[in-house]
Length: 596
Ligand code: SF4
Image 1 (cartoon, rainbow, N blue to C red):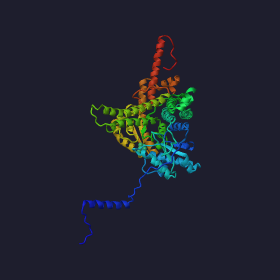
Image 2: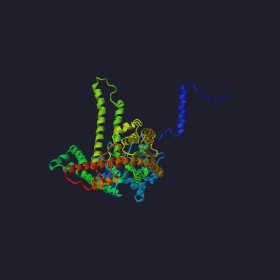
Image 3: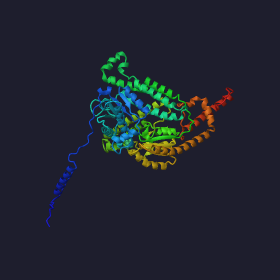
Image 4: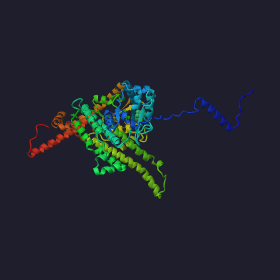
């Protein structure tokens, strides 16, 4: 039988035929000239465009956003905050974005598109929107989907017909730049310190509003006063006069500063730093804010379960549809919400930078295994690592110092930043602290920390649908719950839909937390040997106890505000009683009609 088979004579022949076939198939599939992806070159946001360009941003609480906008405006930019993302924004994000994104992507991307569509409806031509608006957001290289946000914004904007709309990424090195050209947004000293103040004030105000509102005596007073207070702080950030050495120096020194740039810049850095942190205007604004907030009347004897919020960065911060209006819902249901400051996240990043530098040093050090007598190499290895650690350590100390200083100036009752080392140590048996992405080990660490220190009655983790790191930490939370039996922990997946279902699950867990809070309160009241009526009578005679910034010392092991409060008031009553008894024995003063 005749055959068409060609004889293959050698190994080389096989290789040649394989190559030929591969080339044929690649050609058919269109892979012979691959079209690699290149990040689009974006139009620059130049210094000349500043006057007519509006910077858009969003994604925080209204307190943070108002304060951040004030800093932008105070440093010469036009700036607007985006509305709080809602369900229509989520749907818009789904319509114009890629499939399979995590929830915050849809909400935030859709929110931007929706806002641009709104501008267009208001009569601003599309080209004018492209030319006169830019969006400012944080960027990352991952490892979770956060690394894809920038690309997602561009993709959705293109699909929605806003191709070419500029997205500015925050870069911590040399300012905030568009792809090329002169940066329109400069990371100046005034801008940097202003932002530091705004972030810390936003965090502190956010913590305070959730500490005060549940106990307000007159409904709606906290919201009204906080609105006025934040406006006052914004006015300070916006109108604060920038320090310029050439203006404040004595006449004889002015020409020196004018002619010597290095001298001028050095004095300006320290002068501006002082002005932003210790300046009369700044401290005065904080003092006014404190006085305003302290005028709210509170009744801390209302028994409320404390619910600690953890979860993914955005879901635990937003105050809208993105987390089913969870904070509002919890307060309506009688809870006290313990929110998370953004400052914890920055502290976490600094901690991670330090931990990773130490962990990677055996690989990164300049001299591998130097002999004991090679002192120069040993020293180079030592100093190389410690230079890094000292730098980060200084950053950590400065960050904590300025945060707690703002908290102190604004009433002194804000929760302190949780020690990062402790969080990592508590989480590490369940969640490796080197596993990055999202909140990393923080969700587990906070859950354990707030439970063992009895700082809350329940932990509620808000995690967006499709969030990779949150799904991982959810996986290990079941092991955590098994170990800490009295823990009430509830993870809620926040998708754009299913609000009723989520609320009903929270209600169930909250029921348990309420029982826990009530039992704790009754136990503490019993311990005092007094009735609630006696506590109230004493409060009426001592109005300082109805002020939000009256300091109630924290007793370890008690989570509830009301429980802490009755123990403290009881101590005061006992102290007064002892005083009056001693005075009577000495024959000095008659005891007052009531109040012991
Ligand atoms: S942490 Fe989760 S929700 Fe947030 S960007 Fe990453 S994957 Fe998305």
